Length: 600
Picture 1 (cartoon, rainbow, N blue to C red):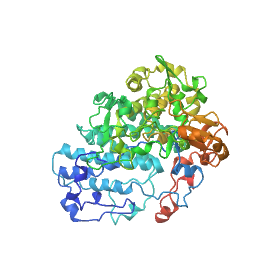
Picture 2: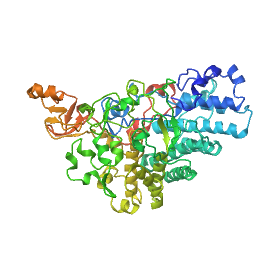
Picture 3: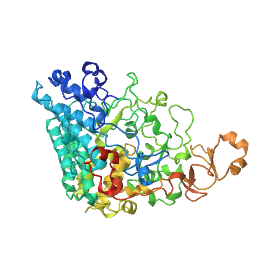
Picture 4: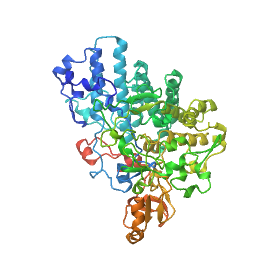
């Protein structure tokens, strides 16, 4: 992955610099107190640029919603171990007290050594602002994990024993420090005419993202005893509006290789000039920069029925919910695509889809639920192998900023129709979905959304519910869903066993849309043996025997596909599981650390 064109060429000239050498990210690892590197480095603006280049990897992209209610995940994740009761501070299932500490120290290392830098003040402040931005980002990741964490604004030295072994600072202090870092970054960073170089708008975007997260977390988590969520929601709305008002970005309507504009965003070989991109991870086959987005398709997860049902149905110049359609709960994998929000077909694999490395329509694995993720699937055959995908990946895109703005305003009860028109309705227009009416949102509350998010606290409840739907749909498979559930205090939704497509009974089924049977679902091996060998050969049937399989149907011999290992196995304890415990081993090393009160 590259963000800047020279990122992979800066290593040789500064091999002795600690941030760019191989480093252990442990909290206790420290740079030497003195070194020739420090005496020779941090003298020019170029030194700051080179040093901050090494921080670009702190920001990344995602192409899945595992783990969350958007996916059926055939493997495992930390939250599932928690919900099975397998995590406690005394066992090895708790990640060690580490994570971002080494990276935070690398940022502080620079900030403590800028006094000798000579050059244009504005240029110096740009890179100093960038370092503050990175520290804010790294620290907020720790806050999301632990809530209270020790705040450090200097790189620790050997003699700093008291600081090394200090206790956590309260969340309120740490988050205010994070916001101060972001304020500094926004005020001092400059605009850069590149989608792969970090600019002021990236800092503004992170300010909006973090403030929205903190505002909703404080609003919906009374256990924090922090009642100033609206303060952060206002910061989020203001930051997002500054980006909107700059008019530097628009939602992309670029269609490439016959794909719609939305779908094109996620399988493009070049996003560096795309008008929607605020920051892009630029991959390149010729330079050997690859990722693994090809694994999104039918590899070890599928998409969920719960997500599928949230996409609206188009009804002329209006929309209606999928649940309002007669027989919605028994529609086949072919029928669910009828008259839906076009983003549905651009995210879920529609029957008949031929992958780039194949000549025939794909038969989706029923062992992953029957709904395959199409979004991010590369469209050239040479990318369909392990670690060989080289499509560019969005890190921050303008659609997220519009969603942040709408959510922050709705949570405050201040959303207007004009706000809706400059945010959600632009997203809907690009997707090909009729515009939303605030009046309808407020007066015609969807009971499905109301039940799902029963704790919504806003004078504009209907607007909050529908903005959440739009966020779930527009940002599906981009790594936001799990954190959204956490900040909205909807972790209980993770208790539900994820379900896939509907199977009306034992028999053969067409799942490619060619009116020919592709799969057979039967109860036992004896039933499978009864299928005529001629039919098996003629149709190349894939036969699923449920007895002893990893999947079952919710109704026994009919119903929705689900993974046997996940049925009635999860319990989400509130508020305990919103926080990560600290390992007892780390508390032994630093007795001043205190365990989260819900994990004692």
